[in-house]
Image 1 (tube, helix red, strand yellow):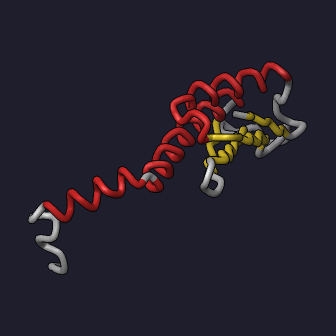
Image 2 (cartoon, helix red, strand yellow; image 1 turned 30 degrees about the vertical axis):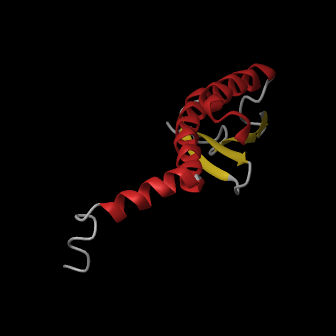
Length: 127
């Protein structure tokens, strides 16, 4: 999996930040194996140096998964590490959800359960 970092001039886009991002992303998405081919991270400072606020740093992560469109999540926090951590948590859930939606095994399990469950259709159309 390739992990790319793009940072605006007001955020910490140095080599150590890229190493941190690479480690966190690869650890979080390891269970998906080769299905995730690339993750692009964009770090930006919403207010730059002019008006500091508690959630200045924004992190956008875009995952590219084989056979699917890009999956994008965003988070913001007081520093780059926290913004990355929050966005990675969201990305892990979003990738898992999208892969499950496209997995024929989980679709059969869901459709089979509702077809065999007499209570699944009970109450439909009632208000």
